[in-house]
Image 1: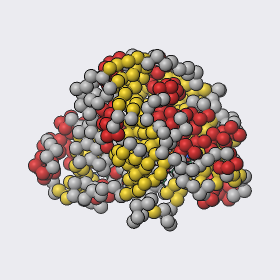
Image 2: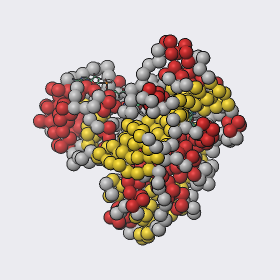
Image 3: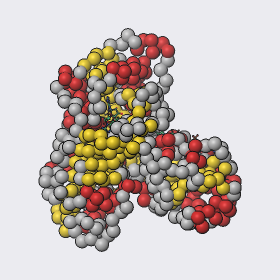
Image 4: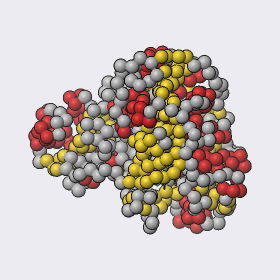
Length: 249
Length: 308
Ligand SMILES: Cc1cc2nc3c(=O)[nH]c(=O)nc-3n(C[C@H](O)[C@H](O)[C@H](O)COP(=O)(O)OP(=O)(O)OC[C@H]3O[C@@H](n4cnc5c(N)ncnc54)[C@H](O)[C@@H]3O)c2cc1C
Ligand SMILES: Cc1cc2nc3c(=O)[nH]c(=O)nc-3n(C[C@H](O)[C@H](O)[C@H](O)COP(=O)(O)OP(=O)(O)OC[C@H]3O[C@@H](n4cnc5c(N)ncnc54)[C@H](O)[C@@H]3O)c2cc1C
């Protein structure tokens, strides 16, 4: 079966973002960018399914600016076979991303689509579920284990109370949680090879999808800063402060 | 305005989160209905009817909604959404799993993790691990919203809404429930606890988490963990606090052997009082802690427990 993996270019998870002085947005100038960590886990899972002989081809897709091709090259270096770049400079919302991915699903007919559970910039946690709804396919979100078996897949999900396992018919949509796997690092020869792997560039118009935003960003502010407190010298002092100053004990 | 709230269930009972979502709904204003869907959920429906401000509880009690699987739940919401201006759920794993399906099928955007209501179409939500708060305005006719429960105080339980059965039954041949492994604990749930004590990689192993038990017993606290502690297998995933785990805002949060990475802070920095116990006096957690105690947790925890 073919596996489609959606990857998103986001700020590196170590970057502490700043809000622009005019509150119009966050300041992304010269900020280090990377593949969304949950998407790395998605690529890794797809590649492992290929190594196990379950998958025959892994196709990586991204929606984003020209620079997002870096993340597609990373996916190719990690083991994806080819890539599709849907190029746009717009601020594309989850619903529009899902509509574009639904068109790619229609073209490519994958047996499974793997996405991250959330992108660490907007923290939406929506795209996979929206894609499932639009394609009419079942979904296994927040996956910590994916076991494909014939025309079914069992997905173990990280839910608030613990773990839940569900069985889905294939094709299915899966979104990754942190414990699904530990992504590998790309090796230099693979990075070189990735440069020659096929990468198709498309536009949202090629798919007939309108990407204009439905949600307007009114303003972006910094959260209330916490004032750093004091260091206490002993357990006795800590308990005293908690009882008599903070009054939480 | 007319608003539908999807109730959260925990083992068939009404979960605490729903009272917070109803509070967010009151901030929007309008008629409030609550949908309780599942199998054998009459008790949950009765509990929902007591929530202040609710006018009607709609109950979809059918085996197809057992375990609130995404496909039938999404289809049910699509059937029921007509006539409502807003559909809300908590940003629990159920709300996150189900609501985007409704949004997509109604061709509207979803606003995730809303923490404040400015008006009926304008909301605040955190982005970038809570390092920025965006104010967003939705032009969609139907607003689909998940609510971060820590942003809204729970409503009271002196209401008496009418309870009405919903007879919509959808088909589902695509997904089925296999099993669940739920953490059994007598402690309060992380999201609702007044006191939370969390351990990180510094705890060393799962056995050492017992050092937190006695303290949690004395304080009536829930126990949490950092991602590093969960990844290392010290404790189960449902204990993870942070950007990609649970968001908590208790009166007192005690971080033990946790360095204070931005992803962890995103899950706890709205706590009223933060205590950090760490042997590294430069650990970033001290920058957000009201009270920091530098030292070895293996010495501090037993002393703390005995003196409480
Ligand atoms: C400051 C700021 C504020 C914003 N506010 C909002 C807002 O309030 N509401 C809103 O809807 N959008 C907002 N956006 C748009 C935002 O950039 C997202 O691209 C968009 O919402 C997609 O959602 P997500 O990536 O958070 O999705 P998630 O659902 O969190 O992403 C899950 C997974 O979907 C896949 N995926 C997501 N995007 C892509 C992509 N472009 N290409 C390939 N795969 C992808 C990945 O596998 C990813 O791991 C904002 C952007 C900025 C810069
Ligand atoms: C996509 C993504 C999502 C993430 N989501 C989350 C999330 O939701 N929640 C989360 O927590 N993290 C998350 N992380 C991980 C985060 O970046 C950190 O790696 C993690 O929080 C570190 O955990 P820690 O503080 O327990 O470990 P460390 O950073 O290793 O810190 C251990 C601390 O223990 C102290 N210590 C050690 N021994 C002792 C002792 N004997 N006595 C006292 N102190 C001691 C050390 O001084 C140190 O400060 C995420 C990361 C990524 C990339």
